[in-house]
Image (cartoon, rainbow, N blue to C red; front, side, top):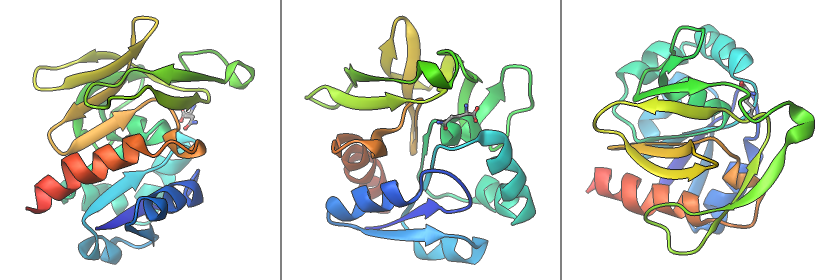
Length: 188
Ligand code: GLN
């Protein structure tokens, strides 16, 4: 599979490394024209306000709103995919969820946790950095994981979103889930 990573800002290289470790091809996506050559897209973590500004600038907002590609958002990428953001206008609106930004405290409060994620047998290692959480989900959105009663992983059809950074660990289970359960099935 050819998996693109939106390469405007944030933890891009780490996702490419995990895609390649999983035996697939990772592509740095810098222009909308490249979207037609990939099977799925990852929107990485970073800073969602900056990310949204850059996506506006390079034409990704419209292109991705119209795109049928499977997408996976991590941390800031989850915020970008959400239909609603507390106190702000939602952006791509691919996931029918309401997210709250920075809901685990400030940068100093970053932490790691072993997470139970539906559909993955082993606990998944996650790194939370000024992470958002999912305050509510609409019908049709499957909750895949929670921590302290806060939703941190969801799937809605071909869209997957997590609050944390799976790419900063050596645990490839989430990326494998995205590629094997979502991208492969969409392509078939
Ligand atoms: N706090 C950031 C935001 O609101 C997200 C942090 C991250 O992606 N690690 O955009």
